Image 1 (cartoon, rainbow, N blue to C red):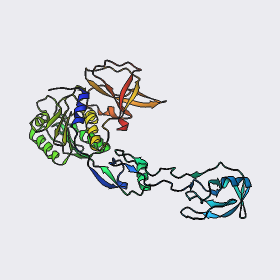
Image 2 (image 1 turned 30 degrees about the vertical axis):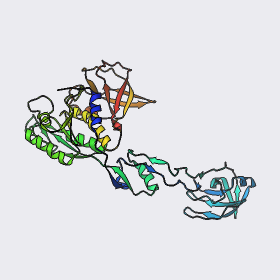
Image 3 (image 1 turned 60 degrees about the horizontal axis):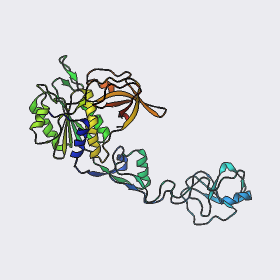
Image 4 (image 1 turned 135 degrees about the vertical axis):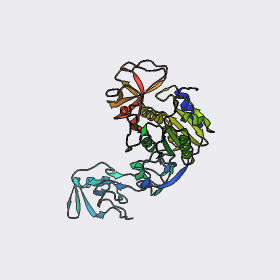
Length: 403
C-alpha cells in the first residue's frame, strides 16, 4: 500500500474533479442554504428616486431661514406627483415616500410645530437630512450576489427586491452512506449480545453531507459479507454522485471494502494517507462518481469525511474546496502521538480579537470518541514533521462551526 502525504491526497482529489457543475432553477422561497450558480446583477438603482427615510416635511434646505413655511398638503407612500415644490412651501411626507421634485431636505415632525396651514421651524437640520439618495441600496450594474455564494435570508430579500422569483442554483450532489460491520446495530434495533454496538456513522455523515449542500441517502446497515457490500456499493453508484462507506478498510480478515474497490474498474485517487485518524482511507473515482472508503470508528469517519468529502461537495456545488481555518493560540500543551499528520478535537473560542484552543473536557483514547466533537469544537492540525507543541504556540485549527 502506497501511503502519501495529506497535502498530496488533497491535491490528487482536486485534480481528479472534472465533472461540470450542473444547475437547476428554484423559486427563491426554496433556495435557502443553496449555492447560486450565477451572478445576480442589479438592473436598476435602489431607490430610483430620492426617498424619505422618516416621517416629516419635505422642504428646500435654504427655506429653513424663513422660520415659517406654507404647507401644501401631504405625500403618502406609494403616491407620485410631477408638481415641483416651490420656495417657501413644505409637503408632509412619510417614510418610504418619494421626495417632491425640487425638495432636498426632510425636517422631522419633532423639529417643527404646525399652526393652521403653516409650518414653524423650531430646530433646523442639515441639508439632505433623512433623504435616501438615488442608489443608496444598490446601483444598476452592481453585482449584488456572486456566483458560488450560499443563499441566506439577506440574499433571498435582495432577490425579491429585484423582482427575481426564480434563480439558478447549483444542483446538489446525491450522496449515499453505507455503514458496514457485523457488530453494529441501527437505532431502535434490539441488542441480542454484548458484542453489538450502536451505529452512529450513517446519521453523523448524513447530517454533515446535508449541511454541506448534498442530498444524502442512508443505506441499510450491512454485515461483514463481501458480496452484500459489493452489491450495495454497485447499486448506490447507479443513482448517486458520491458513495461513502464506513468500516472494512483496515487490514483485518473481515475488512472487505478494500478488496471490493481493488476488483472494480475504478481509478485510485488515494490508497492510504500519512494521517491520524484515518490512514487507511481510500478514494476511488468511477467515471464522474466517487467512492470514499472511510474507517469505522465514529471519530475517524467524521474527521475524514470533513477533510475529504466536504471539499468534494463544495467543488461539485461551485464553491471553493477550502475548509474554514483559523490561527489560534494553544492554551494547553499538545503531545504528538505519531509521525503522521494529526487532527485533534479541541475547544475553539474567540476572545478579544484572537482565537484560542484548549482540550478541557476532551477525552484521550481511541478514534471512537465522537463526544469529543460536541460543543464549540475545532480540529487542531499538527503537521507530520512537528513534535510536541507548547502552550502559547500559534496553531492551525479547522473551525467546525463554520463548515
